[in-house]
Image 1 (cartoon, chains in turn yellow, brown):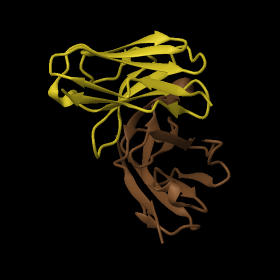
Image 2 (cartoon, rainbow over the protein chains, first blue to last red):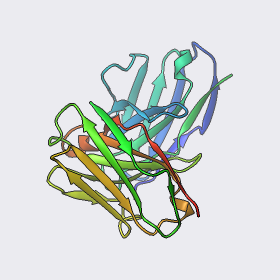
Image 3 (cartoon, each protein chain N blue to C red):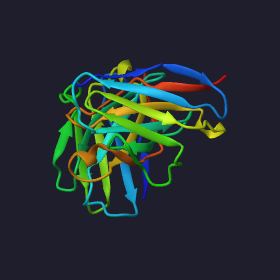
Image 4 (spheres, each protein chain N blue to C red):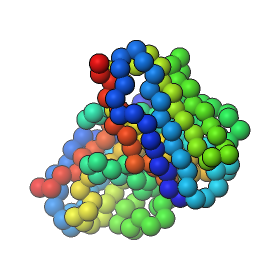
Length: 107
Length: 120
């Protein structure tokens, strides 16, 4: 299985901050990577797919980059509704696997 | 597109967990349909998927106990997980794969999730 490792596991930030989350794959996955946002009690929401393509309706303050094994999710200016947990996911190889999550908390 | 899930929230150890997901709106036949679970306080685990013709892919870690089936006449698909233990407790989600090929692995619509507890 391809292991997905996210860092940090949690980050404390304030509204307006720039937040960067990284995801590393245990082997190359080209750009076959997605980012999801999950708030408590809700299903995950697709933010970005193919490493850098914004899903429809997702604010442009979210951006993704990377290819191969190293990927980044950036929130350019954190908004109150962005406090949540973020997961990366690879779709290059079965079984599809997710990272352990990064919780963005209020400082 | 809306996905709505149903099934029991409590299952006894060694019994079979059964959930169904109904798809409302959009095309049913053009996508892969997935089950994902989230153990309490933990991350997400992909269980498997199915298309309209019944072609499936399963996570090898669960393959011996999992069956995913489809009923295209009702735009529904179902999960069956046998011989459950406490380790199978978690929130189970159904989700739509976004497109074909690799994009089928990106989940763009999700069900509301059902917490299934395995306990006697």
